[in-house]
Image 1 (cartoon, one colour):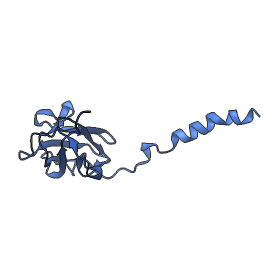
Image 2 (cartoon, one colour):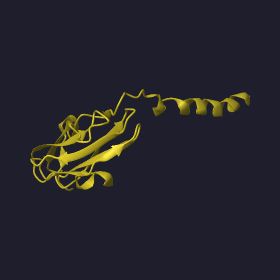
Image 3 (cartoon, rainbow, N blue to C red):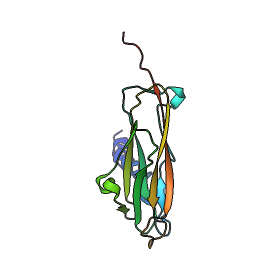
Image 4 (spheres, rainbow, N blue to C red):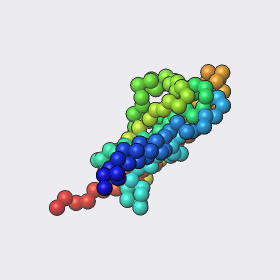
Length: 155
């Protein structure tokens, strides 16, 4: 029967609409949404990250408020050099980034262990909770963690 093939495009269109991001209710004022509270590297199942490799991990940031969200990122000075941040151009050199309602950005962290040990660090997001707060008085620490391990011997 050819009838089932006619329904195929309709089913695809219906499925494409499922999970659309526009259904998120906006909070009053600026609202910082993060997809996670920390960034870890190679710690699933206690595995670790091979020394000499440099994996990336990303933090998704979105303004789920109805007012602009201003954002600034500062890497803690005690964080080991094995952690580096790759920031959007708007956030470099200590500048603040403004995210309008429903806009998002990503901060990437890279971990390149040099020794067989556990590493920890953090960076801080400074942001406004009030649309009139130009000084970014709110803050959120994002812990960084990783475990350096020796790579397996070459065959």
